[in-house]
Length: 278
Image 1: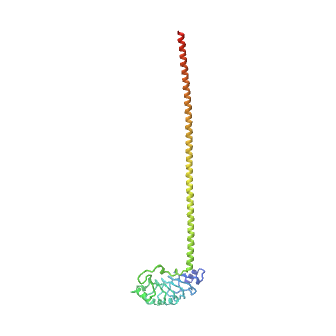
Image 2 (image 1 turned 120 degrees about the vertical axis):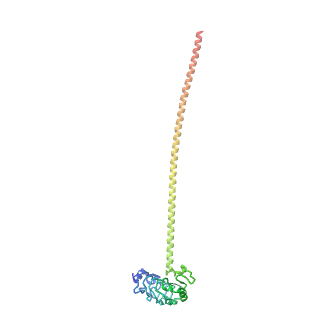
Image 3 (image 1 turned 120 degrees about the horizontal axis):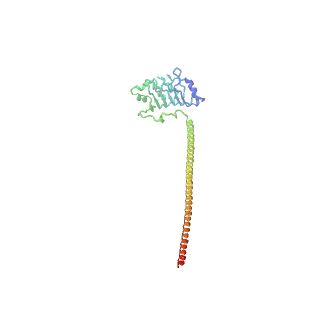
């Protein structure tokens, strides 16, 4: 995709003045120059032109608010004086992977009074003796060169960023607000889910308890029924035994009475026999 079409796509129905961050990485430049980018991008703060086959930055428009410029992996070998003319408030410049060979090609950057960070990774100039000392001497306004200061201390994340990389503070606040609202909604949903799970657990526990109680009740009822039946059977057995005993007793008593009658009869007969003999 060529750079003109890419810019049109990135606008997304916005006007150039609404854009604060523009990323055009990996698109095609025409004859190695910037095209389609105009001074109408008055509020642009972050511009990325990585790997777009640039050989020159001469076509860059004046962008007074631009603070961070990414130009890595191109074919730029000089002509950096345009940056000082068109981008007076630039603070971060990445020229890694370009065709810069001599310290002298960096001399125009002396006019960028606000330049704080410069990256030259994979440029031939980094192979020179005393490269770092020479660059810091040439550009005293620099704090970081290739991510490290003069004392070889690494740049912090806050030093590596410029106003959220060109994103407007209001937009950040809106996004933060949306994220907070989204987080609150997620928390509410989580709480509802937890409450639902708790209710389901309680309902499940109650159902289990109810089943256990029902089962226990059924078991108790069954046991009571068995006990009652056994008690009734025992009572019936006791009544039957008593009835049998009564019958036996009656028979025994009747036999005793019969014996007594027989004895009396025998005694009476004996008396009569004795009297008759006399």
